[in-house]
Image (tube, rainbow, N blue to C red; front, top):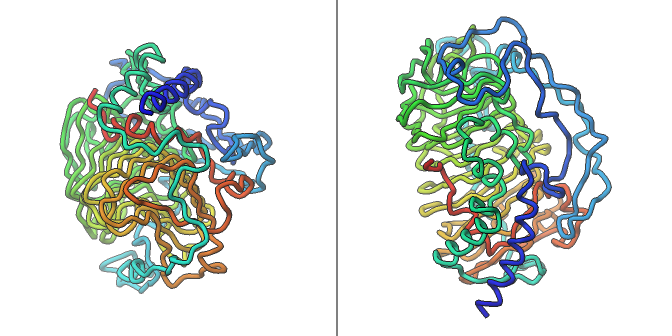
Amino acid sequence: MASGRMARLLTVLMVLALQWTSPHARSMPGDFDTLEYVPTDQEYPGFPQDTGSSAQFDTPVFTAQTGDAFGSNPEIDNSDATNWDAETFNSQDPVASHSEVAQYNSYAATEGELPYDVLIDSPESVREPPSTSFAGEVVYHSKAAYMNDEVFYDTSAADIIYKANDDGLSLAAADLNATDADDMLSSFAKAMGGCGTGNPIDDCWRCDPNWRSHRQALANCATGFGRNAIGGKNGPIYTVTTNGDDAQNPQPGTLRYGVTRNGPLWIVFATSMTIELKGELWISAYKTLDGRGAEVHIVGGSQISIQTTNNVILHGLHIHDIRPSGPTTIRVSPSKVVRRPRSEGDGLHIWGSRDVWIDHCYLARATDGLIDVTRGSTMVTISNCFLEKHDKTMLLGADPAHTEDRNMRVTVAFNRFGPGLVQRLPRCRFGVFHVLNNDYSAGWGIYAIGGSEDPTILSQGNRFNPAGTKEVTKRINDGGPNYGGWQSWNWASSGDVFLGGSYFTGSGAKATSASVYAKAYSTSSRPADMVPAITKSAGPLML
């Protein structure tokens, strides 16, 4: 039986290898539900194009731009929209969503009117005196945000329970061991000329032995809803040479100096380092933090914030042991310093932003959440990350009052959820979520995938193995609107592997309803048996 399973795996490997030899992961037919198209090869006036690691651009000195040097991207053309059937991968009629024209302006993202002194994720607000905030501004507090977040609907009478691989999309419900995963990786490598891993993102760039000279090619490798995040592509290379930090007056060579410049910038690290932030780190538009080739830890101090901006890529960072900070005065651009209230102590908070890609990061032991995506953020991919040792892990939509999150689109793919995680792997509100090819082998405490306010969730090709609680899902009764009751929320499992008695409680439309789940189909799912192999390198890579 084992030999038959391996034969089927090898057949699939050969088919996938033909697809993955494509130069860019995003170019695979059927790899995404194209809700909108944003050109990613645009050029920015005044900046050299991809320079690799050329020494002339490897400098911490970056002249601040005055005015809007970069303008807006070309208008989005929705005429090319193609939606894909999550079950048959056949082209469907376009969905009439996301038809608005999106304008990107990297200068406005740092210099415009921003709610700088707003505490996020909160249902209550109070007036603060000028001593703690800008005079007359409203500051939001989050103490009550989680009041009902562990009150669950009783789903014991649910009509739809997924617990067997009966839809034909998974090869087997086998518990692959480390040897099997290594054998599978060897098969991938052989099929792809010696470098393949089966992970479509990694195989897009890791097969290039000169990747250090072509760092910005990484921007072509995003997949899922965040596939259009270009970060600092086509901007200069900026090298972080010191672990020092000054929240108000960052010096050239520091991380904060780089992330607060206007315009596109590809940020790399000269050596391994640990950076203890002195205040909230605010990342402006068109930035890539590329930790490849170094071991970069961001610890203690304060959280990383991606707020009211766009086109940000974080790759290869260790983010852990994050504490609340503030009120603190921080720099957010070359010409603006603002007073921020106390941060919540998230590892990473994405607030009101779009086109964001988090890849190959390690996150553990924050005070609040490891990753929060809130307040209208959309077109986000979280991939290849290793997360462990935390309670409230990944929050996608923070409050029943934040109805702007109906437009949220997030892909959670190829991640490894490690030991010591309790809940929110992820926890979803309102929007549309594609959770695929993740490894849940270390189990979960309360639940793995949860949600409220009628989110659409497509769980595809994941590997579930409970450590205690066997139910993967929870519907949360947080006091917000239930939109006809949890029974009508569209939650489906397709091709997942359920080990140890685990099961996924479905609702709404079944997985075979392609017309319902096409909007959640953001990229191609691989068979769940491959998950141990394609997630083996989750977290920062040692290159």
